[in-house]
Image (cartoon, rainbow, N blue to C red; front, side):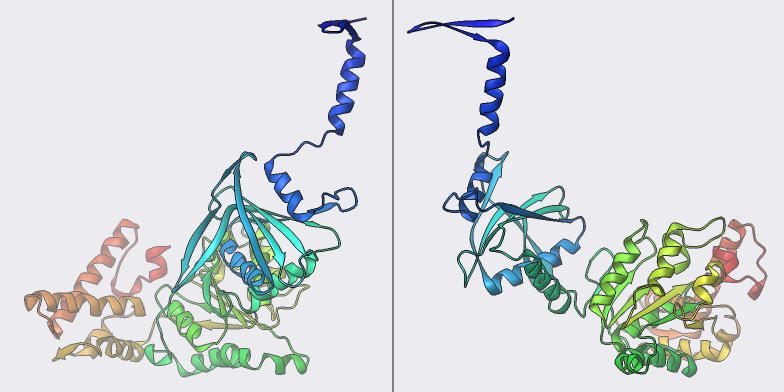
Length: 454
């Protein structure tokens, strides 16, 4: 049996090591171990140190993207309405006090003060006993762990967070805004139908299924009809699909969630986007190049994101007030369950290369801002078969650059026919070069953009 002996002023003290170890373990288990953070929190929530009768409860929120900015704007709005921030502290390793860390996020003309690393002590303006503490622990700029601590029975966390959510979806900065899937505010040109050349039948289709539908969605629901709509814009690159999306952003009074091709890669992201779109309704989800979005398609096997996307478009949850507008350069690559199922994409509009009459109208439109002389646009349109609107725009841009150079870079160059002819020769030469690099045979108008770029 192991023993320890110690010399003391009152004589030698002897103890069994096993008994001593057991007794020390018992004493340590009874000692309340705490650091300055815990102590400060306990003293604030339970000022009379009645911790036996009033347990402290915790709830956690975790953010990992820029949505954190807008959630904090909503939460701070609720706190400002009904609460007072008594103090804000920060500690290094739980012991050494340091300055609280906030960062300023500028969104347009508004600067949002966002909590980053601190402990926030909050008290109700009407009930001093209603207190809670929020600890913010960052892992990255927008990756933050939030822990709410409060005394059970004096603070209703569920009710508080419901108010935050309601603020976020009805008064927050994202409501009625145009933002991307990574929560960046986007700016788009102020465009209308007069800024583009589009068939009247196509424009009416878009107005009927998007603009007027959003305005009358409640009427459709009252009649027992779906409160959601899906429109697919299909066609070669540069034929006006993106421009149409920009016009519709201006025509519809709704929250717009823009999803680029590289915005979705993980399972769950699409579900979260549509969950948000439902709460923001009326809203538009714009999906650019849907054929490449997260690798959607079933060429070899079921893609994990495909089932999720199908379910979001027409699944258990209703998308009332949500319109999905998608574009694709390759509709043939889309799964049939996306393209041949009412309730997912109800309307499909074909954006093909403009015919000769349409090309003439597009060229005239693009040339409106410039001084021109002696143009023979019909001769140009006859030589631009299979030219998209984007290439016609480039034709005008290049012609202006030649005119600008010829006049010595004057302020108001005049575009002549020779400038358009030279620009067209340059573009056709570039197309021939690309075709040779691709190993294709170029013969006038027979080579399509699909062959060139895919």
